[in-house]
Amino acid sequence: MMNIRLSEAPKKTASLVPDPVLFGFEGPSGRVLGRGAARRLPPGNAATLDARVTGALASIPAEGVIGGALPFDRAAEDCLWQCDGQPAPAPNGIAPAGLPLQDWRLTPEPQAGDYARAVARALAVMYEETGRQDALEKIVLARSLLVESTAPIPVEALMSRLHADRTVTAFRVALPSGPAHPQGRMLCGATPELLVEKTGRRIVSHPLAGSARRLADPVADRAAAEALSNSGKDHREHALVVESILDTLAPWCRALSCPEGTCITSTRSMWHLGTRIEGRLRDADTPSVVLASALHPTPAVCGVPMARAARLIGELEPVARDFYAGAVGWCDARGDGAWYVAIRCAEISGRQARLYAGAGIVPGSDPMAEAAETGAKFGAFLAALGLPQDAGLAGVARKDGEN
Ligand SMILES: C=C(O[C@H]1C=CC=C(C(=O)O)[C@@H]1O)C(=O)O
Image (cartoon, rainbow, N blue to C red):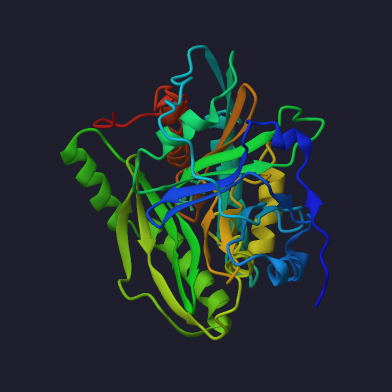
């Protein structure tokens, strides 16, 4: 058995809060907190993940948990923490304070108009390549919104506000600090998308793709959901994700199906097309994080073909994704666990939060509508910070009936 040396948690990260939470997940599948004494698995990229995790799981105590984040770029270093003991319960009765933010400034990077131009460029590439064997069929383009405050962003308060929407999984992962982030960094968010959950042999994935903004008026809101469920463009965008996940999981499974087909699902702020995928693993010992790494990045965050889309994302997006659109989750000593697509999130560092949002582009996409979709996807996080939920829609045209 391979021996993996576990490095100590860097002091900068440990000083983020007195009793640091290195990773935490709270949502429909329950609550997992990795806090207190912890070690970081030696960082590495997707190519070495299986060996590093298998080595760590060989010596982890029965109650130990590995949790953390895989970056968007499979060649970049991940950030996985090993907590050996039972995580201490969260302190009760302490009112999380510091939100809404009082003084703040928002900077879209890029501006909505520049994002729409990047979408138009991607569409031009798709049209040029039509008919070619390796033609670009789908790309997910993202933009970011930098929030700068005069006071440090209070992570504890933020987490409890993100968790107010019980349809999503609120998450946080302590990221490696460095010269650019002397106060440490946290990836925080409220993701609606389950990449893969594993319990014994049973696995579930619930990909989402195809979106519409929720509206305050119930009639207009229902109409938005109906328009989404009848949109050929959104169904094409969605089907590519489901096909890719089924293809990747098939060799690991002895049964795999989508028992309910594609359905409309919702968070408080967005409608989505979603398909629940269920499977039975050939090998019950396959660690959940290994499955997550095999699946990542799905066409819900990257595109088809994957390598081609990833290259174009690097050319068209001005801000590096880092851990946005990666995967976050946890894995216990039996390999059971849950991994989520790291979306509807922000990287928090001191007084700054960098929010990210992306939208799937396929032939037929409208560049300004995609800019508006990313603006709407910032909404849940902005609201959790106590900022106007539609602040991300600056620079995009609004239609009648939208709040
Ligand atoms: C990439 C994001 O969303 C993905 C997940 C659901 C719906 C999506 C869409 O409709 O484009 C995206 O594929 C994001 O929120 O940043």
